[in-house]
Image (cartoon, chains in turn brown, yellow):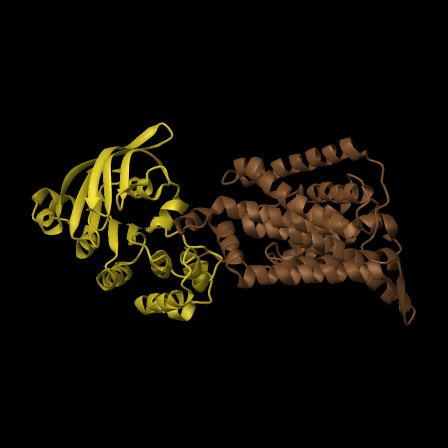
Length: 293
Length: 236
């Protein structure tokens, strides 16, 4: 029994990281209607900035703040300079453009810092708590707490603030939003900036575990995309819960189903995703799109 | 001084010119209807004013040249465009749509009062404030579009084909409410409408466009007296 609980706890910890990146993806989708495949690469580049700050002798917390600030500017810049050319056009073109960005940004990080994984300090003490035979690292608890806090803040932002309402309006119908006086292009930049800042937080949280390298978040991004879709692309709560679900299912299937084992366990959450989406196309927490004409 | 004045305005989509130098003016608190066949440039005239199409010539709003300003800037100056096809935010609730309309305002209490006014003007929306706009009927969506434009507290409302796709009785209901809105608030209106009977019920003056040019203008009663206008737009 304690083995089972241990697997679930470990799954939740991994799932929190999927959820963190999924939150950034949901944020971009909710504020611009797009899916940003370069979300992970932007997060990695920002995490390298934190790494550089720490290398220069500054504390990690300062590194995190600098990384988030850098990411906000980077995200807004990318939206303004690259993505804007594709907005309002074919959605597929925009998606391919963000995949191109993924390759480009990873390449930049690789050119500067090389592809060798390097150790990265943790924000949380390297301790483990034991409770009834189950062990959980302080780092996992810290990561989960931060992710839940960010999720709650995002829910509040969208639900109760004027900025959140404006971002939802722009994602829904940019031309009508402009006719109501909303500064559409500025709101799009803000959406991308906040999402990239969130990605930087995710990167700094996960880097101690994965070791920092330009490809650090490649797998995480795939899981995060799955979590975002599974949770419902417009739901921060859904992104986090689906992230946990994927982390736990992956862990349990790998441990308990012999044929699956370690190599195939990454496929399990996707099989689950296909089944769930067949039954509930809008995702677990997404709102169903209704259109009457 | 007129609230809105167009001087020799042209507008083009890419290579195709749609307006060939039109001029018109609208007094504060006035309402002018724009009639014309499909493709005459009615919608483009409204789009030229709200800044969603490229133009030449001068567009003066309250004495200030607003040509070349984008739609968000003209909206902030007090021009509310209710676009053809309604343009509601489909996934946002009725209430959120109204609040988006009031985005540029700071007077919170008055906003709440104006939401109530909109729901009084369009009682059909009262039970639907929590529903997404996409779940509304066509008539209700049109009401929401007008209400959202009003929430900006504009000085000028541009109304594009508010009767399009509606059952005749629904179209009349919408126009009754718009007429009430006009008389109670004194809001200036520029009204594009295929249904000339509805247009004449709302406006003081009428401008007729043909292939991007003004061909006839006058008061509503003058135009109703013209055989050519009656034949073309009022069914004899």
